[in-house]
Image 1 (cartoon, protein in one colour):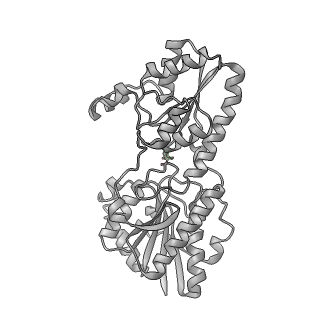
Image 2: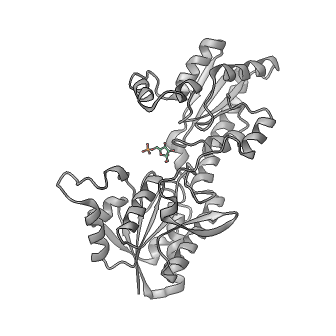
Image 3: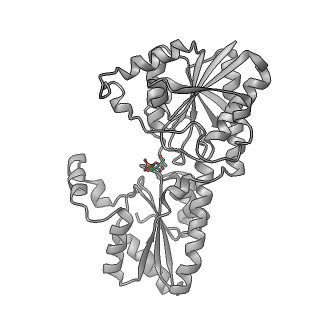
Length: 358
Ligand code: F6P
């Protein structure tokens, strides 16, 4: 008998349910009644406070296309995992105790970077862990692709497509602010897919003069409008030079809701253009997973089940060069996968005239 715990932690994304379904279907299919699955509610919270429910095959039916997570999620910061809660509870000890109390063989943890760090901590504490890489940011080291990313690319691209028509009608400069936290994967892919003229990502700090030059070039070519895909974490060359302390200070007195509004203001002042900002925000994490993510999630989930059946724990299941693989959790936890400014995709985008503001 295998007793397996599931939890989904951190910001949600489109293919969490599809991935859990992949693990569960493969386990039920291979082990029949010799497997029991327990779902912890709202991420690590459920594990800490022993809030769980026993799942049945029925729970995993009809959820391939369902966004969000049937288990709920929460953000439990890795940094404070070792800090007792308001009642003095040792959270790590509580998680271990609840895992042991349920006599689990392993815990399947779906989540992004922060979640992965806590998963690794639990592994170091002796629990059997399998991690599955979730995030629309695609910033997890050791896998080419995270689930959720391609669905978010679809949504952000669709947003840029919609903006295109109205930008053209009004001859405006439009900034579409794309999620992605500290990395530019989502902006880069949606920007290229949506035909953005300027793409600004955290990995390539921008020079406002270069951004305005690119807009002026389009005006001279009588294009009439310009679209910028700007990552929420985009940063100017000037700001990138600041120390962490100085940058923090700047943000304390920051008058804009986000970098896009600062950019809009600067562009308007320098060029006199009619500038608008669109922020699709959490829409990018919502709705149904796209077909790519459904396939990826099913594959990652099924691979995770293979490891569980074989009793191989302490891994993240990723995809590299089109094949699923197991990556030691200790080797990837805490590492951020960023866009390489010298990568082929950047060079190819620049060759067709996309400006990165550098
Ligand atoms: O990590 C996923 C993500 O959507 C990031 O792109 C974004 O910066 C962040 O989560 C938003 O977090 P929250 O949902 O807590 O506002």
